[in-house]
Length: 217
Figure: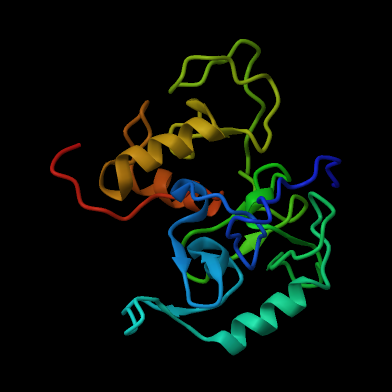
């Protein structure tokens, strides 16, 4: 699956992430931005490129990132073409054994790829991404429980169903925004109120659920 639209690269005068080539600072997509002495990099680009970092600040005010490991990853990425936008510098590789597809973090959504924000932070291309099992397509006219707009009548990357009640349908974008607003403690199916099963499945499908404490739900 190759998209004709190219990545929007940052202006040459502005700092850009050494892994994805973007200067965007949207924390919902990229996480924090680490302005290091010799380079600038996104937190989530590091995570999904499997590069660890030390949260404790150095004397220079930067986070601890192994420059040798980052340099190796950048060199490797420069040899790989993004399966979504077609440009080189793709630092994220599909976790499916034998698959050689790679992509940039900001291209994941456009390419219908999945990035999992837990444990090993695995990533999957459009072909090998996890899918919901035993799911029938939504009936014509079915609406998203969150935004009340129609979801279409085909099960797809953009439409998700509650694994517990199996009749509440959502747009992926609506589920993701709800997860960002609520966090782990409050995130549950808005129809049947299932929490555990709903959170596990949505995490596997690539929904990022911030782990934060809240005063009430």
